Amino acid sequence: MQRDTSSSDASASHTGRVRRRRQPSEATVDGNRANGQPLLVNDRNKYKSMLIRTYSTVWMIGGFALIVYMGHLYIWAMVVVIQIYMARELFNLLRKSSEEKQLPGFRLLNWHFFFTAMLYTYGRFLSRQLVNTVTSDHLLYKVVSGLIKYQMFICYFLYIAGFVWFILTLKKKTYKYQFKQYAWTHMILLTVFAQSSFTVANIFEGIFWFLLPASLIVINDIFAYLFGFFLGRTPLIKLSPKKTWEGFIGASVTTIISAFLLANVMGHYQWLTCPRKDLSTGWLYCDPGPMFKPEHYSLGEWAPHWFPWKEVAIMPVQWHALALGLFASIIAPFGGFFASGFKRAFKIKDFGDSIPGHGGITDRMDCQMVMAVFAYIYHQSFIAPQNFSVEIILDQIIRNLTYEEQKYLYKQLGEIFHERQQMQS
Image 1 (tube, one colour):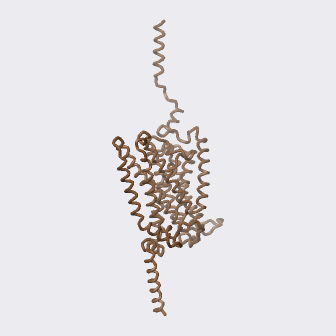
Image 2: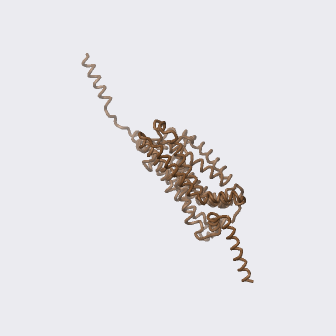
Image 3: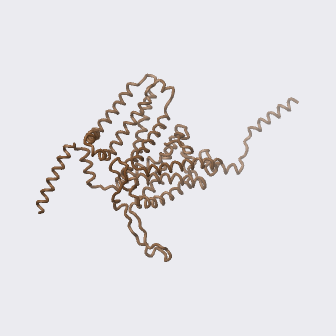
């Protein structure tokens, strides 16, 4: 009796270890997985996730539209706040509380380098706007001109002060941790802060050159999510398991079409197209230039007889917008893939939790950083005038000459003009 019982127990345990043949339905489910994670189309909780994500997106877009309406200075402030949040999220990735307790004030050193980089970068980008803002006050103008002239030296001195501070805080048992934090801080400044700072340069060239690239990234992100949500079947890349080819292709087509149409809509508003030459918040009026003046193309025989329009008006900037749309849909997503690989290396899901349904600020800005640099380089290469202009020469005069030298130059120009008038008469 005991023998039978033991044999039956053995057979039961043996049966528990027998491999069960996979059913066809299970095979289908696993076939729609990427790296063991279900695609959005098969995720049972996707509607709850979509609702949270949509709610956050609506609030972000609404707040973003309000800030854009308020003007250049407020957009700059928004970018600075975003950069601070991104830096905080990234600084926290490699922090160890056990090591930090032995290094009082070491965290402050990270922020010292961050704000030094901010002073240098924005000082270079916005020196002309700052000088133009204070020209009415003679004393303030001299102070600001002096700070701009010696800005590079001041920033270098601040950096060296941080470098000496770092050396003096080195402790025997934390050398490796401290040097790792030092390298990590500089990587953040180089790959995150430096790239995102190009956004500010785009803003003062005209909100159009900030708003259009940023909007294209948002559009691409939204439609990649929607196409993947409803149609996604084919995994795109292992680094980001829920990304699909259907979402990538659908979002690319949508983004390129949106770029062409949005450029036409935004190009009609001087508030968006006019560059800001100072740090004021007043309304802008300017000549939009040939880039934003419509050119009429006759449809001719291409249009059927019943078609109501015989010609179309297209702004030259719309053709440039296609290049921005192409980059936003094909190349910029690799910023997101880079961030996905980065998170996998650190075994985290998101960089933070400040935006419900989206993760942290860095999770939303990964593609924006890549796009901001491209938009700036594209504008400087193909849009901005390449020859010397009055604005460029004035900028050099204001930045490099003292107030007395500028007065002398003014008198010299007056004499030259007076002599020419006498020669002509």
